[in-house]
Amino acid sequence: MSFFRIEDLGIRFGGVVAVDGVSFAVQRGEVFTIIGPNGAGKTTIFNLIGLIYRATSGRIWLEDRELTGLAPHRVANLGIARTFQNIELFDNATVLQNLLIGRHHHRATSLWQELLFTPGVRKAELRHREAVEKIIDLLDLAHHRDSLVGGLPYGVRKVVELGRALATEPKLLLLDEPSSGLNPEETDDMAFWIDDIRTELGVTLLVIEHDMNLVSRVSDRVLALNEGRAIAEGTPAQVQSHPAVIEAYLGGTD
Image 1: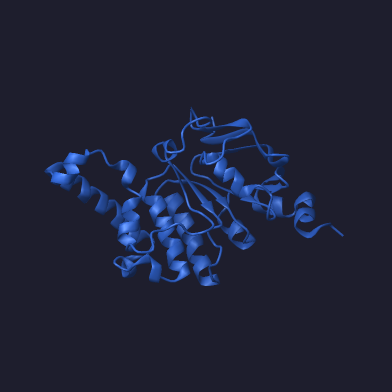
Image 2 (image 1 turned 180 degrees about the vertical axis):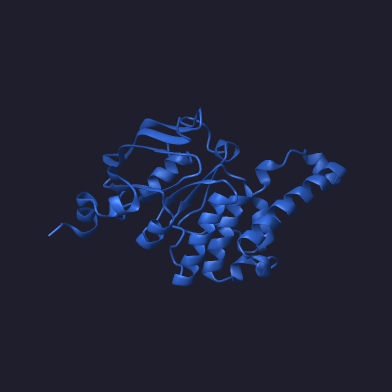
């Protein structure tokens, strides 16, 4: 059985079909990347997986658990985390504080225990700090640990958002255009981190990306979309050379 899969997934907004019968499966430990022109339905699929949108048709599975119909707040508890195209961080909080927010759903203490700062709360806080410090080390964020996020360069903020997602300890990590807005050096770093997240943390990754060099470097398999439909699936080389993909990107093969 596949680690993660969607079956005949579809959604329409009024008379517009944004995703039309898309199916794919992701194996545990894989980096699976979705590509396609703007408006192809890539981010809509992420919103369907995150239960921000309700699918008009189809089903979504993580391991042996069907996600379709669950409440959105259940997603993190089931082991799915996500980054966004537009960075969603708390600008007036430090890097450390933003990463600790990612630990929120791991908290098992009650409100009164938190208010009294009981020994159990202190031990839990230490565990959360240790988990976040490991992420800070992994992503080379030590220099920025106590900096306010709002004053950091864009590229660093992208890494902080990645770190916050990792702080939830996901089984499946959704990266929505991780190289968007990054310079070539930062994109190289992102490629290394994606590999480290997979190999060192054992996280499965589902990625949306436009940078085909990055796609080729990090992806095991690629799915190409156009106008809400899947048009090709395979290795990065197979998909990039597929006639339907060339036509979708360039408007023709001549």
